[in-house]
Image (cartoon, rainbow, N blue to C red; front, side):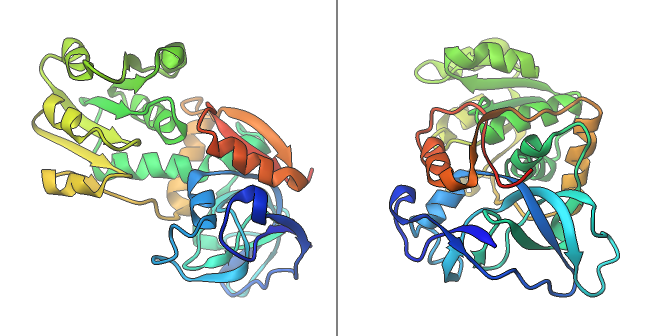
Length: 308
């Protein structure tokens, strides 16, 4: 099968190649997916640069990628949840770095897989899992409720935009930080935008003088702002700043969960959640897709189309 691989750490433009790789084995409890689309996440090129080498075993050559949408090709023993031909999507992270999703086929534990919602096309479905689950799981662990006023740091980003939509779907009021150029976008998602930078605390207090009930941080470096606007008894968490634990907050990383992913798909079916695809690339231009994501100037998901 064709796959994007790298055999050493480095920058995407220097190390990624299209290569022929063996078909993945399909262990018990896993499904082999014929890949339609995959999406790029910052963690992908951070792994590529060796930044998670101390946390996750890596076996070269590596096929990158954890997000996938496609069709079940085959199933392993004792996998009654899915059948060949099922349209699915998944956050396909494993316990080691090796056989990812930037390939014609990938094998994924069934526990991480969910039916693809009809409301999302292949590219949108591929763009939802990692970022959507990150937002969903952090908000759940912070006990989001309909009575909350929520502050989302970096609300126009890949994870933040999902957090806005998920919180709004639960009836919460949402205030989101972003540059002025993204304010209309946040209003479309249902958030009240505020410009980040100097004076942010005052701007948030003007909108929520009683204080914020729940703060989620997807950018880092904002703990002082969070503490200044959080009401007594409020909750806060971050996916990028472990120091929040010293201030009574929650630091969290996303876990694969087909059940949680199915709930996000149900939100999409109800029209409560959408996925903004910024740009698509063919598999042969995957390095460009990674570089585009690295630029940091993309509103929406960068997607690689593997097959149609």
